[in-house]
Length: 99
Image (cartoon, rainbow, N blue to C red):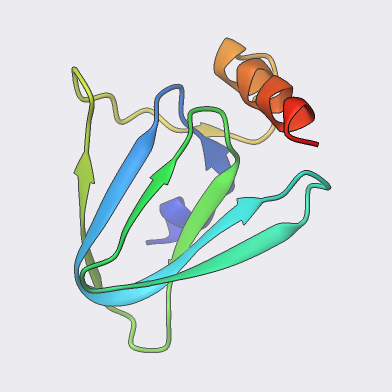
């Protein structure tokens, strides 16, 4: 699970459905501060392409999750810093528009 805790982004949306157990997705807000999202069985989250995030289990130390894809599955994660990718630029531009 350590590899999921490294802050990273994807070039496509990440859609996760929690099948069992629980854990936390950490995402960055507009000020680059962490927001922690608790996830448990039955929860689903969609993280947009280009958002920095990480995942960790809680004190139960167990999560079973499914990743859903739109189109061809792509599993590549790019550890921070990865600001040079177009997906990151588009996400930052989106954040600026919502200010």
